[in-house]
Figure 1 (cartoon, rainbow, N blue to C red):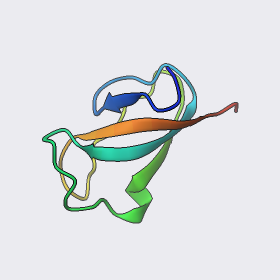
Figure 2 (figure 1 turned 60 degrees about the vertical axis):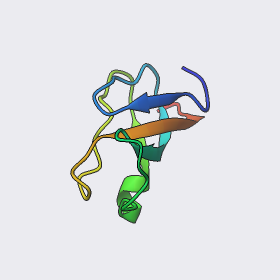
Figure 3 (figure 1 turned 90 degrees about the vertical axis):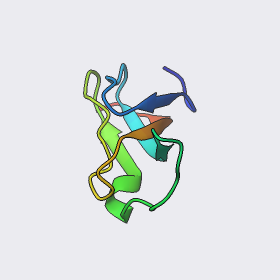
Length: 68
């Protein structure tokens, strides 16, 4: 897992880190998720979530490794 790598809803994180929304799994970018859904924090082995406000799967990009 590296900064900038892309993952999708249902995959497991292989590192503690922060991730940013990078579009929907159907290839669209609209409607934009609510502010609370744009960035997420996941621990190792947590599952990447869908965007609940749009009720659809999402792509996520790693933005920062985290140690906690």
